[in-house]
Length: 96
Image (cartoon, rainbow, N blue to C red; front, side, top):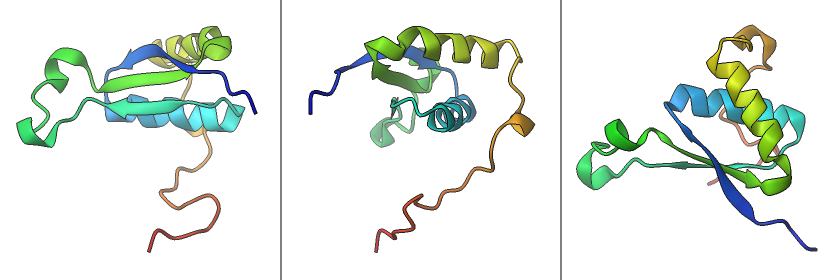
């Protein structure tokens, strides 16, 4: 299986924005990875300068993801348009 490498797509402003874009990308079937800049040693102080974190994904999906993020940021996507968010494992497996 030849997976396309992930590239940085956007710096996210907050955890709320990260969860919102992640929910949309999951619904669209777009693979992605969220990496937070939070550093527990410094209690997240660098997040004020660098943003919440970075969104990474395949280069082939970059434009689509950027378009979705632009819609979120201009208020074009409302939370009621999204499926219910759950912290549960979608496979129903626990991490015990």
